[in-house]
Image (cartoon, rainbow, N blue to C red; front, side, top):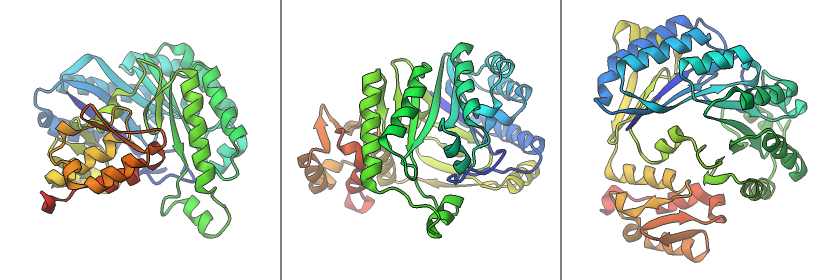
Length: 374
């Protein structure tokens, strides 16, 4: 099995908190043509592996003309063994949602939509710099819920300045009342070189403390469990049959091919990433020049990546699949987090408890191994 990821690096505007690679200017077609050339040139890298998931991310893929998405999908089917039941996800913003576009996306082969709602409150959307308003946020999920996709999900952000549990509950209730089968909920973080980082540095914005953000995460877990959504990854909740297969493949170490500027690829041994510059990427691909860097991961790096991603999931990490053994190499860290009630060792796996989910990255880093310790 393998996955495909298309990074569509176009947005209408820059959001306050975003540090992803994107552009609000420039022609789309030359870059899209370069992405198709990259796809053709690299098709053999997956060999005969069936493609089980395809993901259009960004940026804002829903900015593209529906015919352009359809043409990329057709090329993909021509080049790869795309499974008949493949999950094909398109990230979309509420202001791009309309009944005719939904039908066109379905006809092109999109089976799942990921809606960048972020909030249903007008003041929050304006502060975030989002291109849609609160009415569009509500209307878009109503249209998607009726459109007949195999699945769909929305993004919401918590941990916002001044956010209360009451406001967070309001946001979750609106989403659930509209039949949401999947939720990706992210705690706001201050990333370098973003507008939010500038506002915090200048003391224009005061971020909430860890206690407030943790309380909102606890409320999220309780609320989703009560609503019947399974907490299968730190930031992801889904009803049975609606878990994101593409993202799950990342966490499970499945090979994938990343196409487009800043896109990453992984084949089980090597990590590759494309240049994060639209003009340089387009020029290099068109001219047959290198447009990527890559590294061969060591056993320790591969082990640590599996720890980092696997511990974020409800399944945890299967120790037999790790190349190096953290129980032997980091026994004190395993004992400390187990004794504190944050980590469980059972049935050949390491799994975080609910309390441990608050410290997923910290626990994983404490368990990291080194090649010299083998």
